[in-house]
Amino acid sequence: MKSFSNTYIFVFSTIMVVIVAALLSTAAMVLQPLQERNIKIQKKRNILSSIRIENNAKNAEELYDKYISNSFVINAETEEQESFNAFEIEMGLQMKKSPEQRSLPVFISSLDDGTKKYIVPVHGKGLWGPIYGFVALNDDFITLYGAVFNHDDETPGLGAEIDTDWFGAQFADKKIFNKNMKFISIDLVKGGADPESLNEVDAISGGTLTSDGLEKMLYDCLSSYQTYFKNQMKNNK
Image (cartoon, rainbow, N blue to C red):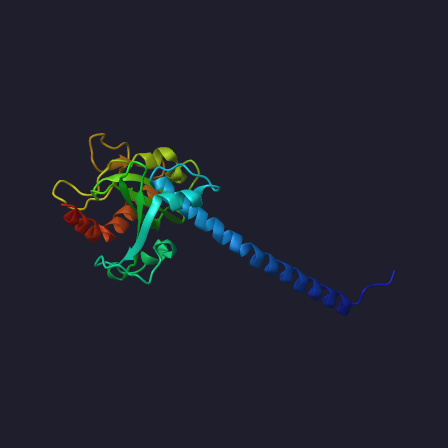
C-alpha cells in the first residue's frame, strides 16, 4: 500500500478544516435569526407571566400584542427617551452604569378587567451567574401585582428555585413603599417571612447567596424607578 506523504496529509487536513469552518459559519448565520426570534419570544413570555397571563411559545407574540398597550424608556429624571426602544434595552447593561446614566424601560399592560399594570425589568447577580426577570406593579405604584424571575447557572433544587411558580407567586400584593412613602423594596427572609409583613417573602431554602443576590437586585433596580413611581402617584391624586 502506498503511503501518503506528509505534504498530502497536511493539505488534506487543511482543506477539511476550511470546509468544516465554512459549514459551521454558514449554519450559524442561518440559525442566528431563529435564535434571536426565540430570545424575543422568551422575553415576551416573561413579561406576560409577570402579569399572570398564561402563555406558551406559540401564542406569546399574539398575547403580547393584546395585553401590552404601551412601552417607553425614561432616564433617572423620568424624562422619556424617545430615541430608545423599551423592548431592546438590556437591563444588565444599564445596571453597570451609574444611576443617573441609566435608560429604564417601562411596559404598560391593559388587562381584561380594565386595570393597568406597569412592568419593569430587573437584573442582578446570583451565586453562579446573572439573575433577571420582570416585576409588575398595580397603578398605585406601591403594590406588586406579579413577578417572574430566571437565571442562567443557579444550582438545581436550590437557587434555581427562583424560576418556579411558587416562588414568584409570593410577591403578589407585597409593597415596595411603607406607610410613610419611603422606598423599602422587598426583603427575602431566611427561615420564613412574617405573614403579616407587607414587604417580606420567603427566601430560597438552601439558596442563601441566590436569595441575597435577588434581594439586592430588586432594591437596586426598583430604586432606580422610585422617582418615576412617586411622580405617577402624585399624578393619580
